[in-house]
Amino acid sequence: MSLPSQIASGLPAVAPGALVLIVGPSGAGKDTLMDAARAALAGDARFHFARRLITRPAMAGAEDHDSCSQTDFEAAVARGEMALNWGAHGLTYGIPAAELSGIARGQVVIVNISRGVIPVAERLAGRATVVNITAPNAVLAKRLAARGRESEIDIAARLAREAPLRTQSAELVTIQNDRTVAEAAAEFVAVLRRLADKAAEGELSRF
Image (cartoon, rainbow, N blue to C red; front, side, top):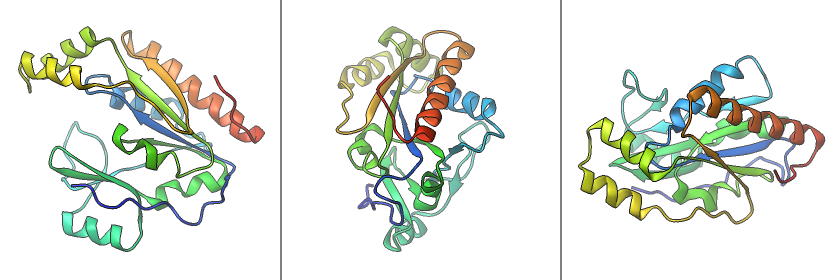
């Protein structure tokens, strides 16, 4: 289910911080790299990793998120409390507007989203960067097969549906996660630190 997305209110047209939108195909290792970056940047007040609100209970080994019922989620949207929301796999995901408040204080806020909502998400801040975490199809197929949730035919169909990623106004950075976690995470953390430095300087230049 996809509810009408809200543009977060209360943020300056060009806030001093930056918004980083994390996207990527299944099997790319987004959660793994985000966990590694979160650990590497722990204690650095320049960064905030936004918590998602999802209509499912918290599960061991899964993403650390806030949970609520579908009814409560829809009520939060109606009250204007959600900056962004989308549906996937029978669940509804959202980013509370409060999770983006650090942008106005100069923070780099990192958000894990669906690529389908990039056009809305990149308008949530004056400075937005999309980080596409991906890997070659052969690597993705191997990782998806190891999960045991889909057949080879289903995996091939999923990968065939992946379209080129485009943005409208946000910068696009691609990280190839077909190496060790340490190597890919180091590149990801370097990107985030560079964005924080640029935000502190008052502008985000191209990579």
